[in-house]
Image 1 (cartoon, rainbow, N blue to C red):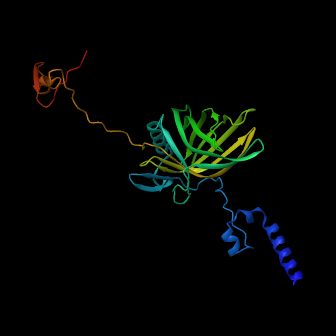
Image 2 (cartoon, rainbow, N blue to C red; image 1 turned 120 degrees about the horizontal axis):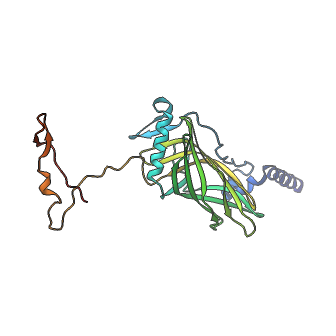
Length: 282
């Protein structure tokens, strides 16, 4: 009986060793239910170029290559980002198929010194938007909200370039920005964002990202994320109203019903009742 127990114990130890660290990541209930079955590890979404960029406008979504030009997408992105200049945009981990947020942040496995950690990005501040000269690109200054293990490092702004090569190739990248994540040295962070989803109605920009760190803190990862801007891509339509004067009346009311002078063929002055004159302040 003791030999049988030893064999079962030895077989269990071999199975656990072959399953690796995945065995210890399982819950106790799962271990008792199926002790020798290893868990499946969810792999991050790989960085890839989209076969088609989906653009949503007037509550309808369609591939851009069917009915849109590169210039239209470029102008729409310029208008969208310019409307949200000096605004805070939220960043979330999302599903590439449904474009729905699965987490309220983007997380990356990193190593700070010799300590394993996770870096989180949950928002980005758009500091400046300008048109680059000579090509279909936008110069952006972005401030990513970076945290790790409950700490917020001091990070410099990221000078980024949004390039619209064609309707299927829209890339946002930066040259790298520095973060002080350790007491010794600076860590450089580089971001690449391949856009495949633009929602002009709600201000959403989605795509595959790749973030890498180099320096005293290193690591990174890939996945799919969505940048949620507070404003949409459409301009405001303010109502033109007249201002009240000090007497409580309407400024220039005596001019509103006046007739505009018009010169006829006999060089005489007549009046056109269809034109209204508004005074100009000097």
